[in-house]
Length: 196
Image 1 (cartoon, helix red, strand yellow):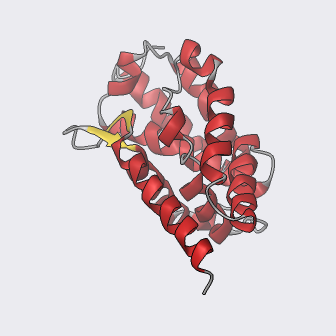
Image 2 (tube, rainbow, N blue to C red; image 1 turned 135 degrees about the horizontal axis):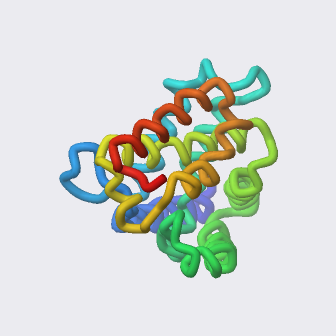
């Protein structure tokens, strides 16, 4: 056993626990409170397992799950930025790059490269794995908004056009679900959960 490596890994694991204190804008479906970032990450990793039949043949679900588990780790230092917050999103990339350097630098080079690579691939949304993962990342809060009468959308004065734009990645990442998503958007507009 490499004691120094293990110490770094344990330090990283302990540091990752800080993510449990970062809240997102999204309400839990029962509307009792806002979800935390790790709850979101767990939920979309579970979604990857449940919805894997809609992934393309070239999608590696194990890689997708790893990607989903690391994609928001940088929020330990960068915080969670509301998807529809134009001002907050302006400096998001820089904040997250600095956070990634700090966080992934805690482990040995091989793990740092793996985690960073998965994080960057997710962010670029160019590979089949990343497109599927990003689609799930967008789908989960969308479903929560549908189930909470558009709670988060109301906070951000969000319109259906903004939601269509945000969910556009689903057309590429999970095309079989796009009709389902469109119908839900229309339903939310009709129910006045979402502005037209």
